[in-house]
Image 1 (cartoon, rainbow, N blue to C red):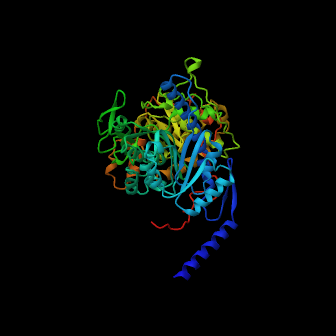
Image 2 (spheres, one colour; image 1 turned 45 degrees about the horizontal axis):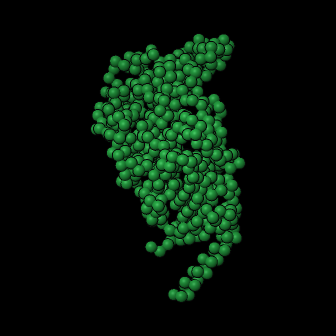
Image 3 (spheres, rainbow, N blue to C red; image 1 turned 180 degrees about the vertical axis):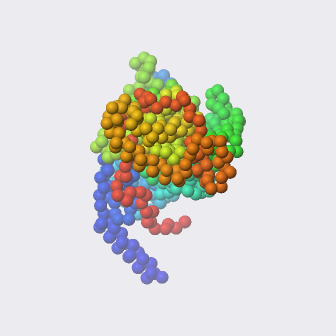
Length: 598
C-alpha cells in the first residue's frame, strides 16, 4: 500500500511539473496572470469581468458617498475618510477577477479569493504575487458556502460578494445574502441557461422556485426566474433585493443587485412577484401579480384575478402558465445614468413616455440620493476613477449594452419577438422603425430589449399589436398587387415608378414565398363567415393565422414615420448587440480538479 501511495504522489508531482512547464501568461485589463494547462479560463467571459470591474467601481463611489452622508448626519461635522470595500470572490478559479479588482477598483481595503481546489488556490497565490497585490488579496481554500456562512456575523460581512460558478448559482444564494452588509452588492452569474430558459421546467422550479417554459422572451424570463430565486433567498432573512443591472449575455446571465435589510419591505414583495399566462397561438401574454402595493408600497393587498379566461379571446388557444417570476424592474435607471456618465458616455433622455420616476419603483433606496442640489457645503465631491478602453477590452460593448438597458421600459415585463409574430401571421417581418411608429403614433410607449435585437417591449394591449401586424399584412398585399402605385415612407414615388419592372419581379417572388409560408392555404375574405374550426384539414396554427388575418383592420394604425422610432443608442452607432466573439465560442468544459476528502 505504501508503494502505491508513493507511486501516486510521484505521478502527481510529475504531472504538476508538466503543467507548470506549459504555463502561459494572459494579459487582461491591468493584470497579467499565469494559466497552466487544465486551468479553467474562458476568454469570451472577458466582457463579464470588464463589466464587473466597472460596476464595482461605480458601486464603490456610491458606497463612499452614502457613508459620508451617513457620518455627516450622525456627527454634524466634516466626516473622516470612509473605509474601503471588503470584497469576496467565492469561486475564484485562476484569481484573475480578484487581481483585476485589486488593480483597477479604487478604494478597496481587502479581497478574499476562495476556491475549493488546492491547486487553484496555489495558482491564485502565484498570480497575486506576480501582480504585487498581496497586501490586498488573500487566498482561502475551502467550500464557498461554508466560507460565506462563517462571515454572516455583522462585523465579518462583505460589501461586495461575487459568485461566478460553473452552472447554477442556486446553492450559493442563501448564504450569499447573509454575508452581505446592508446595501451590499451581490454579483451573480448563472450559466445554466437551458434550465432558466425553459428546456427543463421541473429543474428550474426545484432550483429557483419558478417554472420556466420556452416563450418568445425566453432570456428575460430566465433573468426574472433568477431574480425570483434571489428574492426568495433574501426574504428568509428579512431582506429585499434591488436590481441595479440585469443582463442576458451570450451563454450566461449576469445580475448586479443590492441587498437591503428591511423586514417591513419583505411583507410587500408579493407585488413584485407573479405568474404569467402565455398564448401559444398568437403569443399574447398576461401578468398576474400576487399582490397590489398600497401607498408606500410597504403594504400589500391581495391582487384581483385572473386577468384572462380559459381561452385566448384573440385566437381561441388555451393558455400556458409559468412562474413565479420577478415582475419588478430589471435595472436601476438612476444607477445606470451615473454609471454611463462616469464612463464618459451619458445616456440621452429616453423620450418613450416613461414617468419621471427613473427606476419605475417605489422602494426608497439610497441609490436615488440627490446630491446635486442645495448649498455648496452639502455637496459631496467624489474623485472619479477613469475607466478607459485600455483597461477594458470590451469597453464599447459595455457602453452599448448598458445604454440599451437604460432605454428599456422599466415597468413592462417581457417582450415580443417581431419575427415570431410575423411567423404567426405568415407575413414578412416589418421594419422595426415602422412597427415602433405604429405604437408611438397611437400614444403607446415602446422600446427594445438588450436580450434580443428583434425584441418589442411595449405597454400597448396585445390586440393593438395584432392590429399593427394585420395592417402590415394588408400593406404588403397592396404592395404586391399594385407595385406601380407604391410610394415609400420617404415620398420617393418617382424612383419606385422608374423601377416598376424590377419591383414586379420581386413581388412575384415574394408572393411565391408567402404562399409557401402559408402552407399553400388561400385566405379569402369570406373565410371570416365560415366556421374554420370545423375543418379537420386545417391545422391549429393555420386556424390561428386565418383568424388573425381576417380580423378587421384598425383605422387608427398609422405607419407614418415617428421621430422617436429609432432609439438614441442606434442613432449614435453604439455596439448594441454583439456578434459571435470568436470561433467555437461558448461555455467551456468543466474544470478538472482532484476530489477532496469530506
